[in-house]
Length: 217
Length: 217
DNA sequence: TCCTTTCCGTAACAAGCGTTACCGTAGCAG
DNA sequence: CTGCTACGGTAACGCTTGTTACGGAAAGGA
Image (cartoon, rainbow over all chains, first blue to last red):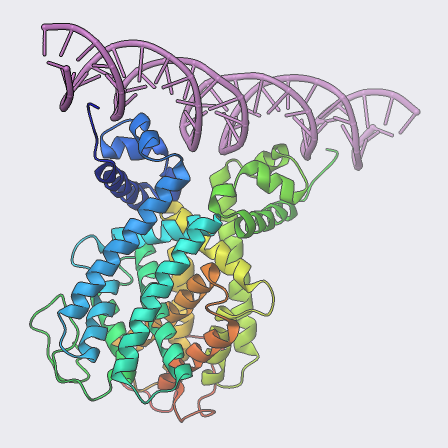
């Protein structure tokens, strides 16, 4: 049985190529030939690694979710208390040190594709539900006395704010710079963590950020 | 010169067809033939009313902005004070009585198309900037004592929340029902309108030329 | 070394895309 | 009523799309 291949590695390579095409050329430019070119191969390999284009998109979507989940796990594990973990997880969701706008553009592309494909929509909802569950757990740890209703409302509000900032920044990066996103998140989190913050709060970008409340420029 | 046509009416008809196709079939299904079928004509009329597909999309995008601006004007005019106008304008942006999810789906479709087309992106930014200016003016009327920085942060946070709710509801209507969207918006507005409801009158003319009671600077 | 078997690039396929050219036709001027 | 002209439906264009079939090449077992 000669010449064996690593199918998993091939799929990962192609999924990464999907992201790059989606980030650079958008959803209309997402063709199999463009993906193959970015991956440094031909459409032959693509169609041997995936039975159809839809399967490729689903795998790329799942891989995107996996990596964001890994990042969120790391951010949560690196934080001491629940409020710090909440800030860290949400903070890394709105502003990444590298390639942030790219990821938002990819996210929007998948979302637009999901609105036309029920299978993709299901993956989208599953990923968002998982993120919602994580935030809800952290908010509940910060505010154990809250009712389920308030918990759900705050959780979905925070997630909506984060995704809204990402979406708006994807189309208008200069109108929504990283600083403003962090500040908006910090302001929204004040209602959750309130005064019980002992650790240094936001600002993953500038290590000189003050720790006092109402940090304003 | 026989047989004259109403070009404006034709373009409006076609733009409405673009919306319906975008809402039902998503961005990948947005073809000239699909638009023509929805409009009850053939591609011949489409290409006589617009020189190219891109021109059609630009017109449809502009018309979408025009209608939302008219709705926002109406909501603002129907409110007595500034805080009421802010609630009304944002409230009608997150939840419309009819065809709300459709409009969000259309908005996402245009956004995804804008990420691949700079001209569409410019229209998107212009529309968003106009909406931001409206919200900023209303927030400033509610809180004249706020600094420009806090004004901008709150404005963009509110808009990001609204758009985030819309985007998430477009892909997961059951996870983000109208009730939750209104509650999330009301909670976010508590920090703005607070206890001083019904005090400051709304100014329908200029972006607040200093008629507020506690104007700084 | 050779053979066998799996891999994957090449090239073609039908279908659908945006766009164009053409001509029948509908409706006002005379 | 007749004729002229702008309108718009028809159909084809060239191109790209996702998908398929096939053959050459590469690599482990003999």
